[in-house]
Amino acid sequence: MSEAERAAAWTVEDAVTRLSDAMASADVAGAQAPAGHGYIAGLGWFRVWRRGQRVGAPPAGLSADALSRRRFAERLADTLAYPGEDVARYGHGGDLFGACSEFVPVAASPVAQRVIADAEAVTERVAVVEGETRVYDTGAGAVVLVHGPDWSLLFEHDSFGVTIRVCGDEWDEVALAVDEDPDPQVQSQLLTMVYDVLFQLQRVSVGGDRFAEAASGSGDR
Image (cartoon, rainbow, N blue to C red; front, top):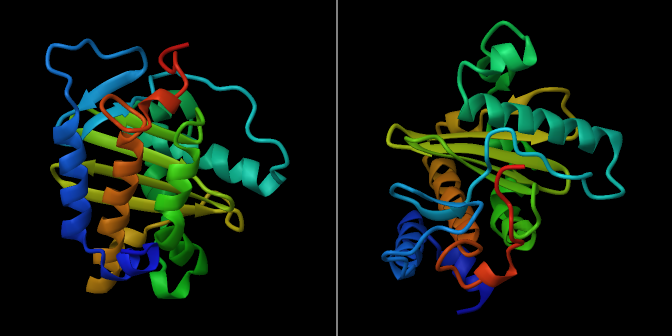
């Protein structure tokens, strides 16, 4: 099956099955997780972003808008992963995540449409680059951040459901609440995207076929 044919026929069920199969194939019985990797219940092994972890300089050539968007998305990811700590850390004194979220239908947002179409391919390309993707273990699930060329994708997956936000270069500290789109087809596309991104992130951790590519020592600094 070609990539175009797979994309056209791919469903949420296909994406979940692929993720589950990859998780089951990780033969880690009795093994000790290497530094920087952790098991997230119900989702599998990932390179886990540690509290207070820092990376070096961002990729060269980014515009001021891109740098601002990335910092904002990282701040939102911290806020979502560590609720309650964001007030002390950032001093905003309120619900940053809720205050910055704005609903726009996916059909009216070219950026959101690009994220849905490109998130898996971008994740596959940058998954081994420290800081370009982040997976936080929240204890109840995972918060995931992926930086794209002119967008950042942020989502939380836990037993309560999936929360998804999209940040773009053209918006100043605004995150699109794409998960609030009532269109059933959009909802299916978003869930499929989430599981496809998780699959690509699994590939660079324990048991994944790209584990050897992942940089070592990605834990606490």
